[in-house]
Image (tube, rainbow, N blue to C red; front, side, top):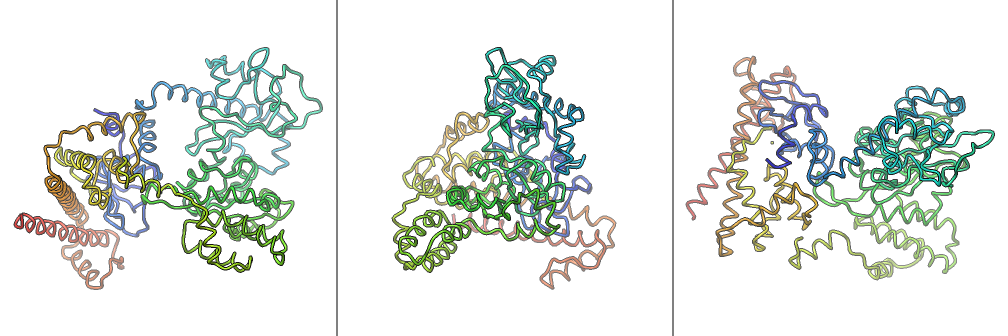
Length: 637
């Protein structure tokens, strides 16, 4: 049994899916409204006996537990596998012993957070600051705010007494190496635990609290002295400031629901926003938006709004850096195609931070500010042109020089044409001249590079499918053909990923189609990849390979449609139970005659059964159409 198979064997798909949607028991299976598209009648089914799922509705796709988590969390195969492996308690070979070390660091952080949180009531200064900022007890508890006492060894002594080594605590960033041994990094500070998007504590931020005199100590760490307003955990194996967003673990559902993430700078801004009901707000912790943060946000959001103070919003250099990040194409794991984040900027009123705006400017002030955010390029044009005299040719030249790089990074041709037209009017330069300038700025995108590698020949479910050994073998055989016979590349890239029902096979096909390599570090996928590329193919001619390819595709499609038909018939039979004979058919005929599948005024059970009847009829038509096509192919052969 491979590690992937062991992960699947230890996980109940009903429990996993049930954490995302409300499942209803229906005979031998469970049903729900599909979590991937809007609908009134449930078309999403989970089959515990076969540990798979399928959507009969608009999605018309399915898979196993890994494919579900991948689609729902917008993770790639490796990310979904690792998430499920942690849940199942399976140690992946690609993680190895280092994974246990990392878990030890995370456990140390969790223990430190509990320690700090427990000390918060003991600090009058910390409580006074929290009251001054207007935080309620619920948010103090939800965000697990704490207090680090002024002693130099308080946390060290507490955690070492519980079995953590000093070297481990130094590696976690909780202690600092000094001349007289390790000492606490955070002292006499309000503590903000920093979590990753899955809620694991990976580091801390500490805000200094006013004291009459700083405590004396061994020194050795300038940034940890009371004079620094904020101190963060340094770069560690689990803490990378440029890859994290404060509050994302609590904001991710709201971001998904609204499609928008709002980025502020400070911890208090995030907590205040959440306290007042604006739960799609996260913080960049003082860093400019990075490529890694943008890639993380793209899993949950389509639009990102940067709430910046007037000085930051007026910095062309800041905005240019943001535009570079925003314009970087990243593959959408769900759609399988590259896309950009829609990054916008809102300049807050001078002298107002998000916390103040939310608390003191009326309940509509913050939503209105977010709604007024402008795309980065629009904001950049406004900022740069505001500081220039566009009557002067030299200033118009400067405007073009500062704005053109941002326009060059816009991948949408319609938007790019719009900005060229606008710049042409402002700078009094013809669009043709600007386009020539644009062509003088070569920029090869990731997708173009992948295509170039491919041209050079470089490696570039309303139903459970009853996967028999033959289907699994055919998937593997098809992958071998695609990897070993270059002449099949064009036909292979026209296939859909959903043809491969086994998650790891689907991932290998995706990698092959996008010319993404499988590395030896990815042990779980590498093992299967070696089998695929090392298979002995009893084929010597290209025409034989093409015949085998088409036959394999045909049989996989046929098996999938037949399984869909069998399962839809099962769902229909159980859905009709308790409904008056003929009632379901009459409703289905009425809907089909009207050319609509909209629900009628009938009771839910009857309406659902009618929808299932229509789905069963459609599945039957597809199945018999495939039989006819196969028969014709055999006769022509």
